[in-house]
Length: 221
Length: 342
Image (cartoon, rainbow over all chains, first blue to last red; front, side, top):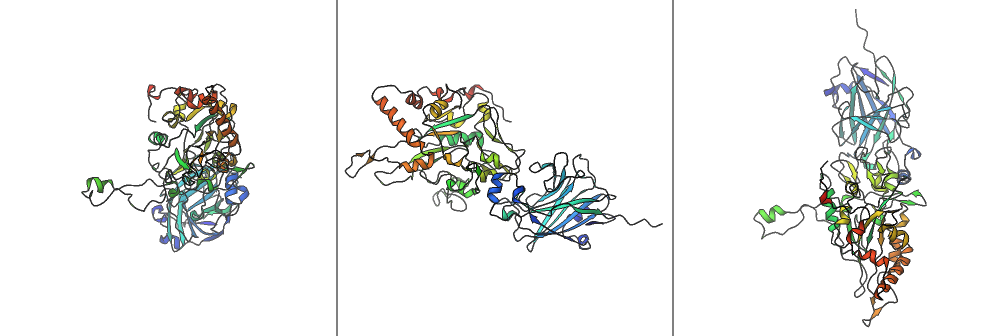
């Protein structure tokens, strides 16, 4: 997938999933699968989910734009229930994350590995803040801060529309640093709160998808 | 399984519990008054037989069977019992005291943390019930700890107390599903799971947990399981009268109970009927396992000894004439410590 180049990306505007700029960008459709039961890290989770479907969301439409400074992803997926709040012990919020490798060879299937971190830009329906997350293996996610990643979601007509954005380069050692001249990879995960999805119980797009940042048009002389 | 150097334990004598809830309030005032904790009761006392807290918790699953984790389900807030709001303003200050009465604001409650108090089972004159106080069991093989995908739950090496690290907890609630005793609550304000901490800040200062020290019935004993001079070892290992609740849950609980003896049954003619127990054996076995029958026999035999004027070490321990003897190494008066709020 190629992130569409814009000369100037107004992040405040782009965070609105309905903003006009998104209408001019083509979407890439990614098939999502539930995470394998065998990859769930504890016996109790495997026992609880042995007879339940993991990952109800099976497709996500992804768009991306950048201006050489910031990168924004636009995600759309079908979800018949808007789960914004944790109203009871049994309710979980809908959520989404874009994963990026923070080291060459970092495996996304296992959420990174020791010294091979994976960076997640995470949005959750009950939180106005974007979560900047790093992981070096299953069960190791650390939220670095709640300000570097910006995210906003909007639910309408059985669909979530979510924008997640961050500066290409940030002052943090263990996260993805992006550059228009190099290609990277990305992966997407969606959690359907109505199905009790949280942690490793989610839909995901599998191994890294190619991510290229579109170049600025050559300056005319 | 987490390895610990020593294991703290509590032992509760169900023959002495009067259901006064002093333990419950001692815990409430000390630990669960912050934001999001209003519906939490880390210590509960329920009438048995009964549905308890959360409602029908014994049917919710979790724990281990033959070492394999079992599926459990999450208790809802209503199953625990909401922290009800009452119309105090209206009744006491709104000038409507003669038109209305004190009642819960909002939905009519359907359950609470002590909803079926004193209902019990059986028919007059052979009705029966007893009180069952419960805290976190600080299990040796803790299902909550095993279930957490983030290793946010630790079993303290020095004393085996099971604690949730709220900095690592992400509020996923797998621990609540996995705990077969359903003794973990979810804090909706802080998005973390919370539970009994065996008063570890007190224990670290040689002070017994508040529920134990405050108990007017002198039924809660505290100590290390390997302390052969302490009451826990004597009751659990030497006399074998103290048993864990639902041992079949497979978590190796570290809270023990002396099972309840009940008065003799009354027959149709109004005479004592000793041929069968008032509390059915099957019921007690369902709670404490087959060993409960031996425990009851030992208790009866030792009680008979003292009735004959003989001495019984077991009865002396359980009577607890000398109050501090109940708390092993944890006899310090908390009033002698200057506590600082973190």
